[in-house]
Length: 324
Ligand SMILES: Cc1cc2nc3c(=O)[nH]c(=O)nc-3n(C[C@H](O)[C@H](O)[C@H](O)COP(=O)(O)O)c2cc1C
Image (cartoon, rainbow, N blue to C red):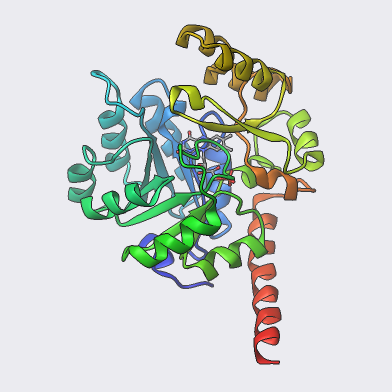
């Protein structure tokens, strides 16, 4: 049992969250994280309609009675007709235990979520966005560092600096994301001032993950040098597996391109297909630098139990160093 403001806020045993992962974090793995004492988030963006999302929440509920969350990933700019508010409505009606929002300011969602008295955790890559979210009424913020899988933002600042800084300037609890993979990085995040962690890559490389075995084989051999950043040219950088598609996208970014051409390589649907077929060279595949620290595919429960045990051992080792 670990007690922080995050475990209190969410009613969970360990402050270890699996961030929403489009096309990956479906009912089974979300339930597995929650069952293991953490909390999993279903990404609304994996579903074409609000009713499909509702069905997935219900399916998850059949697998666990522990708290589960809903990730709402928004485009950088509001687009008329986007389904964001419908997804929020479903989350409220289905009584999810928390929302994880990302992509742009959660301002538009806050009144509805507050009225429903559901905790709102907003994910940001920069301190100024975290401060804004706190001011708007977010209950906690996730700070993602440059090493993360997915979108690290434009500033290229690592978790080591961001978590420390966030804990100095914010009163609401902070969760660290980006590079958290085991008990050592969990303990380090707590030491820097975080009250919980959010992980993506480590759970993507778990037994329960639905990605093809070829990806799992790659995760255990990949190093910390095997990811790269793409899409900076459209101000939406993304840390991904450095495969043939990543190299191609870099090439067309360098010469200047249209969004249409970019999307033929970078669309999420191409990546989704790759998860199924196991073709490692096709698609833009979000992966964090911590892939270099993964050398075994374990179950979600093993990952979480080992994190807690390793953090405990690490704490004892540090106490030994400090006292003599
Ligand atoms: C394959 C993959 C897909 C992701 N999809 C989303 C998403 O749809 N929405 C979102 O807010 N974050 C997404 N993320 C980011 C994660 O929720 C989490 O913030 C990030 O993985 C943390 O960094 P780590 O990979 O170093 O653990 C994704 C990450 C990965 C690896």
